Amino acid sequence: MGSKGREILGMDVDKVLDLLNKAYADEWLAYYQYWIGAKISKGPMKDAVNAELLQHAADELRHADMVSMRIIQLGGTPLTHPKLWLEKTNCGYDEPSDPYVETLLHQNIKGEQCAISVYKAMMDATREGDPVTYNMALQILQDEVEHEEDLQSLKEDLEMMLSSHGK
Ligand code: FE
Ligand code: FE
Ligand code: MG
Image (cartoon, rainbow, N blue to C red; front, top):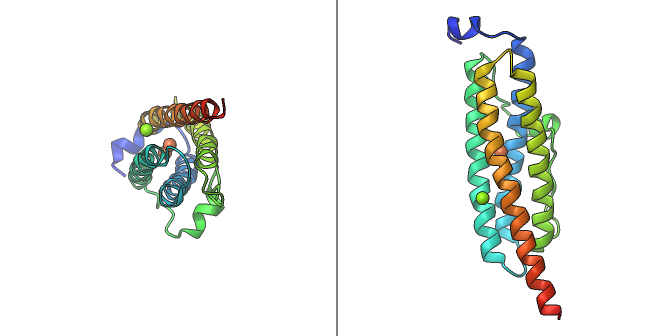
């Protein structure tokens, strides 16, 4: 890492790197959960749901890229083996074993809610000691908040459509 960049770090670099690598694991798992969900989904509004899932998958991959660049800036190494994703993750991996669209939406909403908590905690931990990581976490948090809202409103539309059919 650049020397002045290190000098302004007001906290333990290993602590930041640990938070970053755990979030890095989350992003890859979130990416795959969205990506595979969009391949296998079944049910009403499938096309609209898949378009949203694929858009979110692309965002999660971009987040993994942002987090990896900060890890490298800080002199760390992003996790080099996928098996470590499951060991390090905060939010886990919710396997889409039921392809029904509403179930997928429900699982991904839970994932976004976890991601929101993770980046809020990262911001709280770095607010004073690492403004660069703080700013990255804020940018990602804004996307995760948008993701949660997108999915909740799709789920609402789906529920409205299903209940009007039942009348
Ligand atoms: Fe993300
Ligand atoms: Fe997200
Ligand atoms: Mg979206």
